[in-house]
Length: 202
Image (cartoon, rainbow, N blue to C red):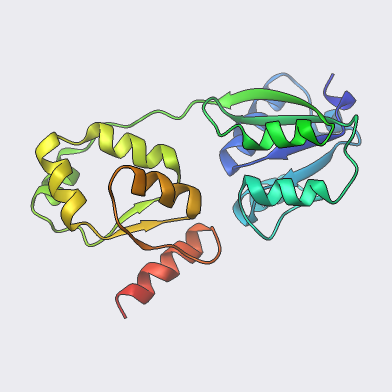
């Protein structure tokens, strides 16, 4: 039963969306949450939660799993039951560290991230080098991007592209693929990423 959990942690707006779509699809409403407390990884996720007229009890200053870990290390979660609806493929650091802190963690795959097809017009822009900046908002976007590229184009992009990443985890993945990261905002949000890109061209 959902009401047996003490916490639910959302690490993306997508997790919020698919979790509640499933909840409402099973003919439950918000009362099914009972007294569960809610944690959001950052402002975008908190906004998605707020749109449901719910409040985030925890939102760290560092908008990533490490920030949530720091926040939960400040409170006693020993023996607490924590539910984490998330992408099917996700980093294991959050559930692992929460378990080390004594929590009973349940992971639920709420959605699957799939690579889209590379549109011909985008491929043409890449080949003609008319794209000023490549932006990546997660490690999976980096991996999917490189899976879609022809080898010759991949090598050219590695040499020439300006790259903007939303945060350090994504930047590390980009660098692992051989990209040089030009832009990384102080706050790990889309608006901050856009502002940092704008600053690059001022």
